[in-house]
Structures are given as C-alpha cells and as structure tokens.
Image (cartoon, rainbow, N blue to C red; front, side, top):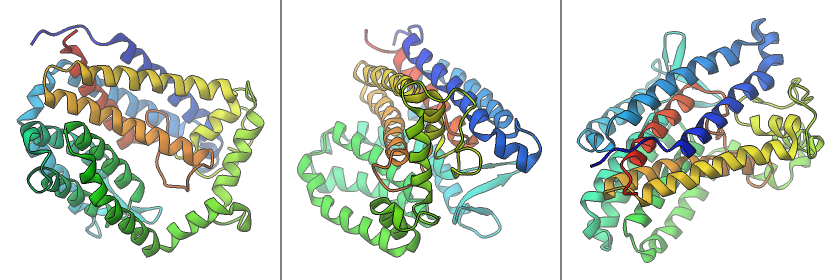
Amino acid sequence: MEEKKPDLWLVAAILGILIIGVVMVYSSSSIWSEYKFDDPWFYAKRQILFAVAGLIAMVVLSRIPYYVWHGHSKMIMIICLVFLVLVLIPGVGMVRGGARSWIGVGMFSIQPSEFMKLGLILFLARFLSERQKLMNSFQQGFLPALALILFPFALIMLQPDLGTGVVMVGTCLVMLFTAGARISHFMWIAGAGAAGMVGLIASAPYRIKRITAFLHPWEDPLGAGFQIIQSLYAIGPGGLMGLGLGNSMQKFFYLPEPQTDFIFAVLAEELGFLGGLLVLGLFFILLWRGIRASLLAPDLFGSLLALGIVGMISIQVMINISVVTGLIPVTGITLPLISYGGSSLTLTLASLGLLLSVSRFSTK
C-alpha cells in the first residue's frame, strides 16, 4: 500500500478543537481550582499534560500502518476486558459520582471503559471484515457480533456507566450496519433494546430523577433539575458574541462540573453563538474527513476502523451538546477533546492517530 501525507484538514480540525478545549478548561475551572487547590491553573495544567501525552500517542499511531493492529486487536480486546473486570473489585476500582469506573495509578487515575471503546472498535472491525459474507445471516453473522458487543456493555453497566455504554453500543451498531447487517436484524432487537433501556432506567432511582428533571426541571430546581437549569442560564446570556473569554458568571459555583460535562455551556456563555458554531464547524470537518478516510480506505478493516472512530466521537458530541442545551436528559458524557479528563482526552487523541493512519493509505 502506498503511504501519503497526513490529512491536513483533519489535523487542523483536531488541533483547533484541542486548543479551544485547553483554553476553555482553564477558563471554566479557574475559580473552582483556586478555591479548592489554591491554584487557578490546577485543572488546566493537568489537561495540558494529558494533551501532550495524547498528541504524542496520536503522532506515533499515525505513523504506524493501521493494518498492523489487525493481528493485535484480539489481545487488546482481552486486556481491556481484564481491566473492566478489575475496576469492579472493591479496593481496586475507585467510586466517583456513584460509579466504580476508575483505577488509581499514582497521582492519576484511568477509566477502563474509555479504553474499551477503542479496543472494541479495533476488534469489531477485524471481526466484521473477516465475516462480511455472513453478515446477512442473523444467526451466523449478526448474533455473534451482537454478543461480542453486549458482553463489555454488561460489564460497563455493572459500574454503572450508562452514558459510556450507550456511546459504545451506538458506535458498534453503526459499524454493523455498514458491514452489511440487514435493517430487519435491527428491527428484531429494537423491541428488546427498548425494553432493556427502560429496565436499566427503572433499576436506578437517579436515572428516573434525570428523566423527570428533563421533562419538568422547575419542579425540583435545587435538586434534580439544577444542572440543566444552570446550563440554560449560562447559554442564554451568551447571545451572538458572548460575554467575553473568562467572563462567565455560571462558573462561580452555580454550574456543576463546568470543566467536564457542561463545559460547552460555559463556552456558549463566554464566546456566544458564534463560538459554539465555530466548535461545531470544526467537529463537522473532523466528521467529513473521517468519513472520507473510511470511504477511501484500501480494505474493509481500515474502512470500519475509521468509521468506528469517527462514529464514536460524533455520537459523543451529539449527546453532550444535546444534554447541555436541554434536548435530552443528563447522561454524564463529556465533550471530546474539549472537556477535562485524562483518559478521555488521551484515548480520543490516540484514536484519531489511528484515523490519520487510515487516511494516509487512502486510495485517492
């Protein structure tokens, strides 16, 4: 296969989003950082460290031919599964926000479910590329692939982390459809999936509160409806041009998680509609070039790998911004490349390194 230069459109979009993310992490977290750690740069410095590590991983992986990972995808999947099991063990896994989703590593912590998203994309791309001729069969093609997806999903739900699980399953279903699964196959599982989702929501009282808060946030403005109300209070005053970088009022202990789940609300408050439009435009470029890399990949493994990565990021962006703007209930999903978070940022950049590698071997 002939190697080409990296996709400069894709590189520019990634770097643009990343720079905006680092700036917004500092702006949104400086007040809370100074109050809690006596250092307004606490979160920003860590985000810069994660960004540098992620960029190094992205550059390295972009230089390695993507097809090398075909033979290693099974071992990567097994390692990710082992970590998903380890995080469930008391004393090993750390509980944050009611979910046992983290493993402490020195001063830092890792989130195994983030690694699983990429590991499953890699292995599923190999699995589907080797069984494409069987994908029109429900029993021989679709059902085994579905079992492969649902097993790690079940482990993630034991943490529990519904948001990450939904992103992972949604990404994999896009890959299944692209690999040749019939629409009728999806219809068979749609009812079961809907019933399962209702069961997952009903099994956890906090999820029911999120649904009711989404429908009627003002019935409990200081409780379940607090996040979405404060998010809309941030977006509203932003107007067209925003209040100016650093001038957010909601980050003064009004908006929960201003540097993570609701960072887009602070961005919209400070940079306005135009700032939000710029971010969405950069994500659109990433989506466009990612789909182009998938369509022009020289083999099915590369095509599915690129599609899975761009699908994962796009689904996460849609969910996060929909939550922040009050279109769907709160899910706890961060905004890729912008929200604070070591595991999410470094793994996203590493994934984009694989996407860049696929683009370097495009047929045009």
